[in-house]
Image 1 (cartoon, rainbow, N blue to C red):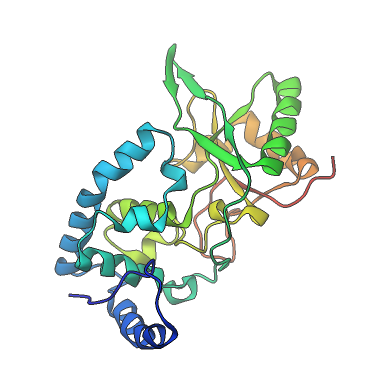
Image 2: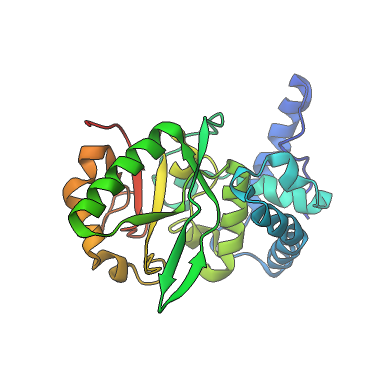
Amino acid sequence: MIAARPFSTPLSPLAAAVAWFVFIPAALALNIDRLTPEETTLHRSTLQALEPLITAKKQDGTANLLTWEELYQPLSPEQQAFLDAFRTLRGRQLGAPSHYFGEADRPDLVPVGPQQTVKDGVATPLDPQVLPRNVFEAYRRMMEAMEKDLGRRLLVESGYRSPAYQLYLFLFYMSKHADSVKETNRFVALPGHSEHGYPPRQAIDFINQDGINGEDHPEEFEALPEYAWLQQYAKEFGFALSYPRGNALNTAFEPWHWHFESSDK
């Protein structure tokens, strides 16, 4: 059992100093190559406890804005401590020299959409998304230019994500990566490491109007004319591909993931 107190609870300077010695060993005890059977059980029970909350937040369109307080509230002390262990981890501990941005303040956000994909005549709404205002304006201008050239545009499958929601996603996708913290980190960033939660380098995960996002088969997105257009013109609108093939961050190739830096237009 990992005994620790949630980071979201304010601590006095003395308590914080004591907590440092409690939390760090807890994090280092976490089996990052593959969760132990006990950790796997705790992982599953944590996701189960969070399911009603996440479902409700998705239904009202606020999942991406999840706060730490909301994330911790449904959990037992042991489950809260399990989250604390993940929050002490850094990419360099997991074999990835990834950026550590920290947890930035929430920016001025605007909604994107509503959006939907249409495949074989069937319309599928996308989950509500938000972006910092300046990023949304750059995205809007870029899509107007793409539509003028191609008659098509890309949709925002994922924009801004709070650090708390980022941790939930990390835990959710671990099951897809053999319960390995280290392997999951190649595909999903830990909180504080994600461009989705860092407005000065805000990321957008694109999906095309036919529902192709490349998540399981990156080559499908890579083959799109929309991707070829991004490679040629995205920089003019301030966007750059974050994780090209063979990147030095030990992160999987993500042709759909572009971040905003600045705009020349």
